[in-house]
Image (cartoon, rainbow, N blue to C red):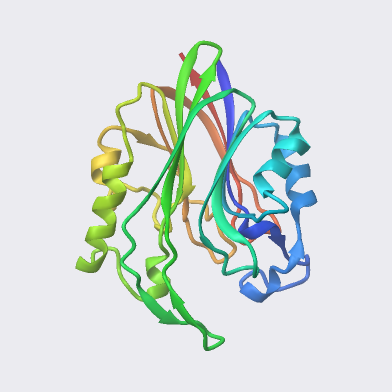
Length: 254
């Protein structure tokens, strides 16, 4: 069976003007939900993992996208308040054409790093966690996971810093690699072609899509695709008006 997947940090559903500076956070202020839904419809992936989704008591962006696609299955986990738009919860989601038979969310350890943003505001590292959904793909089970890790670079903390190790161990403990078929997609905030240096325990049991093409307008390779029990056919990073680019992949599941 061939399946198509998409990983996208949608940045609260915001896009920029074509003519604006793609490297400036202040450029991403326009409502881009229709723009994103149209692109996802065109690609028609069976499984979508979304990061930096917004949700409140009136709307859930993951549900909006699922409805636009006509997909009946989605889960969305809110893990902190949004830094992008006041009054919104920040989260991550799985949207699927296949039934999601079970769903789990668990928080990672948060070292509460602090920094001062360019506008003078104090910034404390957000809570982060792992979303897992078990998908029923015509009799085959696929464990789909998504996450968004702390942007250590923005806090001036290198990945090999001892202060990162407690957070890293928590991440490794939460990611269960025992399922026979596994897909892990997300914004790892690790600017490298491979995750082996940061998560060797996970990568020793899984495979990853290796691409040196940036997944952000600033030239960083933050969004990664990890898999197990499937054959990778192809992947493509698609340049868009968002502050992260979507990663489209195709797999064969035996």
